[in-house]
Length: 333
Image 1 (cartoon, one colour):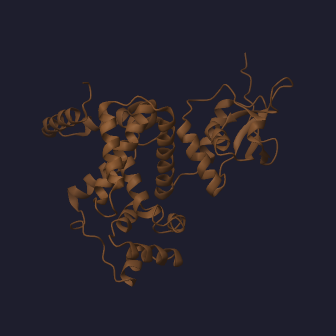
Image 2 (spheres, one colour; image 1 turned 180 degrees about the vertical axis):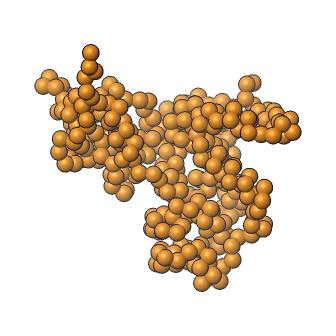
Image 3 (tube, rainbow, N blue to C red; image 1 turned 90 degrees about the vertical axis):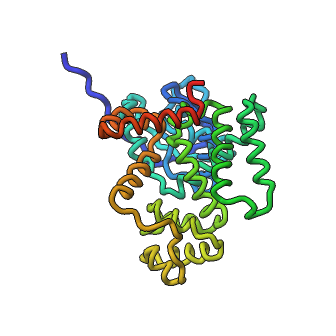
C-alpha cells in the first residue's frame, strides 16, 4: 500500500503584518522560556523583526483568525513589549510539521559574537526583573551571590577589576536562572550556553556594547572583525576607553581594514597576553574554545568521545581534574 505523500510547505502569500492578538498559540510547540521571549521582544523593538513567525488559518469557530505553528518566543515577546504588529507568513493547514521545523531552523540567522552577547545580556536582564517580581525562594548560596553583585555594582567605577566584575555578573545571572527554572538543565540546553560562555558573552557586552551603544552594531557587521571572537576579545582587552572607541570608529569607517592595520594606524599595540600560541598550546586553545561554544547537553553527549580520544597515560590526570572540578562545583552533594 502506497504511503500518502507529505504536503510540501508553501507560503500562501507574502509576509503579513498581524496583530499579535490575532494569533492563537498552537499545541505543537516546545518548551517556553519567558526570559527568552522578553529578550527577543526587546531586540525586535530595537532592531526590527528579522524572521517572521509561521501561522496557518484557524478554523471557523476559533477565537482568533490565525494559529501559531512556529515562533512562540517571538510572538509572546512581541506581546510582552507591546508591539502593535508582528510579521508572519502563512502555510497551508495540511503542511508537514517537520518541514516547518526545518524551514524555521534554516531561516534563523546565526548571530555574530556581539549579537549573541546582546541577546544573552537581554535574557539576563529579563530574568532579573521577573525574579524580583516573583520574590522567588533563594538558597543561601544564591543570596550570597546576589549580595556580592549588589556590593560590587555600588562601588565607584574602576574600583573593581573588570574580570572580577564579569565573574560576579555571570554568577549572579546564573543564580537568577537557577532560581527560575534550573541552570544546569533548562537554561543551558534550551538557550545554548554554559556558565563559561555566559562569562565570555557578558565580558564582550561590558567592554564593547554597554560603553558604545551607537557603535557596536557597526563593529558586529565589520567584514574582518565582526565574526572573529578572538579579534573582538583583543579590542575588549584595550584598557583605555578612549583608545577602544577610536579603534572601533576606525574599523567602522574603513570596512576593508584589518584589526592589525587599524591598531597600527592608531599607534596601539595588541594587549599583552604572552607570546602567540604555538604547538600544543595552540591546539589546546582551539579545543577549549570550541568546547565553550557547546551547550551543556552537547558537551555531555560528546564526553565519551573526548575520553576515548585521550591517551592512556593522560587518563589519571583527567580523572584527578574531574574529581577536583566536581568537588569545586558541589555536584552530587
